[in-house]
Length: 271
Image (cartoon, rainbow, N blue to C red; front, top):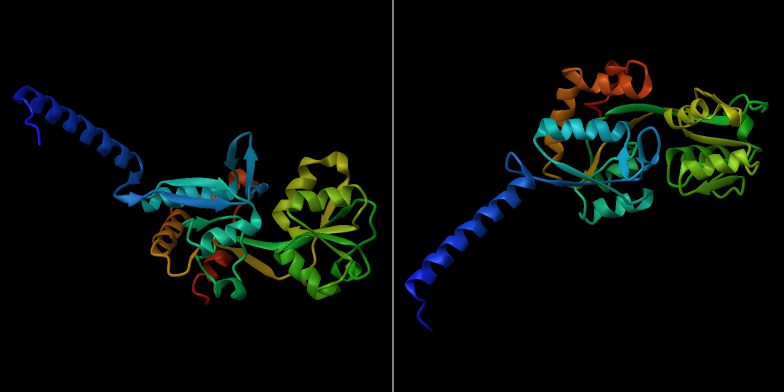
């Protein structure tokens, strides 16, 4: 090994201190309170819950998770990957959380962990203003468009028949609604907030939303890999933002009404 002159040793020592300082700043920028930054996956084609505003992912779900993450001391990065891939990303543990209007149900709980519920929803029916459809029973001999892999599809599978050609399945609800508008379907069945938002924002399409009480209430949850160590942090944070009014503020800004907090809380201890 060659000897290093004393002045070179001084230079090397100074350089190593500078590099160490740079490295420390890089770690700090990726952590919050000593907790790691989290990768969050979503299907950003589901306004008003998650959708693209130019190159940014925005929506009610994004606001809620961001507020909960801040309360829990985490930083988050949102990635738009599509509906089916969010389940793969979580199962393979390539992402820490998925949020995408995901209904908590027994089948999904076999493969994933869920937070306490953060949103109450139900399926409704979107139809043309001139349609004579009055409720779910009127859909039995109609062509119905749904998003594949959703509870809207499950409801129609049960009503019309799982392999019925009268159920048209699409990658997202936007495509299902386009099918209705162009006359390829008689109705769309989807989460109430999604189709209500579309009908309200597109009066020129002359669509209306109808409810049917045979559709059960559903609750959305944040989805984690099985055995996730951060689930408890987010359950605690969700409760905190519900209690301190942050959740209600976000809800009113997005939907213009007050959330049913009592019904939401009543689900928290159900298995």
